[in-house]
Amino acid sequence: MEIVLNGPVLAVDIGGTKVAVGVVDPDGQVLGQRRGPSQAPDEEALFALVVKLAREVLEEYGQPVSACGVGSGGPSRDNHRLLSPLNIAVWRDFPLRDRLSDVLGLPVAVDNDAKALALAEGWVGGAVGEDDYLAMVVSTGIGGGIVLNGKLLDGADGNAGHIGHIFVAEGGRADAAGAVGLLEGQASGTAIADLLDGIAPADAPTEMRQRVGTLVGRGVGSVANLLDLRLAVVGGSVALGYGDDFFDAAQAEIDRICRLVHSQGTRIIPSPLGADGGLVGAAAVAARASSG
Image 1 (cartoon, rainbow, N blue to C red):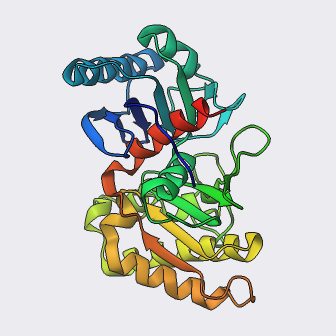
Image 2 (image 1 turned 90 degrees about the vertical axis):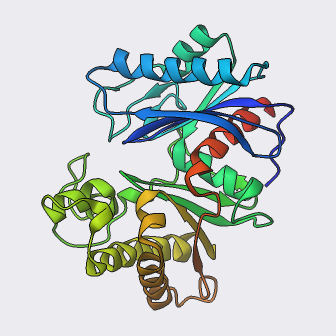
């Protein structure tokens, strides 16, 4: 996937646990960043944090940037003009794009954080040279971005790719939207914390790590069967933190259910971008917007 940045941009990654802000150069390198918690008492407090981090990063960088790209948890309305992230309760129809552009005096482009990761993986990550793939974030929540025929899928309102909300298991806990049996309600960091009842998700036993991997593999395999793709690149603190336990179990489940000619051999791999994937993806959102 061709991503072209004409110069460094400000990148903002907003997830259910943290906000990261950095400057990303035309080679996809993160030049500097600041982070803070995304769980705030109200919508204005969270917006103030985003602005504070952005100003600190820009002051540290000390040179002009051409634009700002944002990757945020979803869903959204009006093609990401109004944000309502399921795992950030204080933002409902929050007009981040317009508010941030007014404060920073920069053009701002916003997209879903997992769609942003999909752009990043095709640019400088694990899907370079691939025209058909799925990118996923398995962290506080679970999101996805889908590239088919070399193009990122947007959908009617910009929300295509919400793999966290496909059905994977009977029963279990409800997710943030109130649905039972969906992937995010079973395998996200939030779900794991509830299921472990007081044990931090990072300290989950092997059996839980494998269970999460199996459920994610079930979702990936279903998408591969549906959309004729054979690669899933996965980032996020849960997936990358659980490592081989997660990815081996996910691959085994994919192998079990991908039996069609077009989905046999589907692979799931960890994102090589690691913790910087969200910022690189946000920069790619800015590049995509500037290219029209």
